Length: 235
Length: 190
View 1 (tube, rainbow over the protein chains, first blue to last red):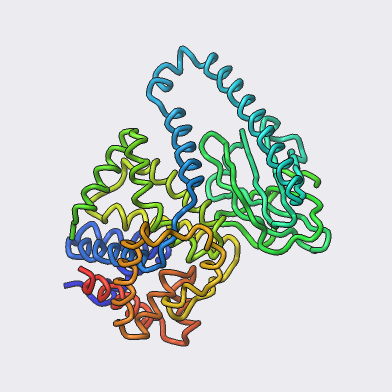
View 2: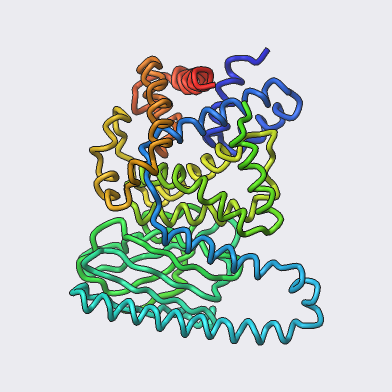
């Protein structure tokens, strides 16, 4: 017999609404109660059903290409062969990775420039902003923003960035001459290789962009920058 | 209740966990539509929905080996993962979702308008739209206060405390409505 209170908690647990302490306590109960585990399963399926209730949309084909490209890179990075041979081949692997990174950056920069040129041709003026550390940290990091003012959106490309640290996220900011405070342009999740390519749209309209910056914020981000600026570039 | 589709999903995920990219691509074909539809609905931004779905599929690839079939179907596992990632994004951006009182009004909302260019053809989406209609029909039969509570609890980033505040109801009442609504939905669908 599961009490109403425990059933309520089960629903909130499935929706991720319990606090960390409540979650830990509930998971203790779960371990010892098969009926409760069955209830949680049912509630998870109910949540899945709710997700089915939204009108059907088809993702663009490009999204599949993006996902599969990223998966291929992940697979390559994790391949057992590269791990077991790492000790012997580490110097070569580092050299190869460096060459590959250079190639990727050259290709990426070429692509961004091509996109920029294409955007210009279609009367959609864009700008390319390179960000760098204000105090010389992360000298190997490469961060580029392609910004399209008329679309109020852009793409940030990152390579070789270290992780932001536990409980922290990188957050992108647009610094607008007409706004007192920087405008949040979203959280930047980098992959284990320090790479990201993310389309973003600032929370508010940007009339006169002065710079883009990345700060380290608490996990989930903030509405105003509170943490240190680790990368910045003038438009 | 396990279906043949659940079994097929588990098989594809198990193969993906072993590094099979072709199986993962098939799983993408199977799940991307529903996950993307949820992301568009909750984020009201097709571009951001694409970024969120991309992150989720990378997460699925990384966690495939940890999936536990005794806890949920692959579909619900992926759906809840997507919802969680979307809520992170909504909270990070400090936005508040505009909650549409009736889910049947969705075709008129901004997300639908913004995403009109990628709406599926009738032939491609017939099954999923039929399924969505079936779930919405069940939802419509729930008591209004339960429907409202689970709608807010699932499709917005509001916590149950915030939902109670917003609806001017005691916290215990809101918790019970969410739980009863979810269980009734499950009971009616299975």
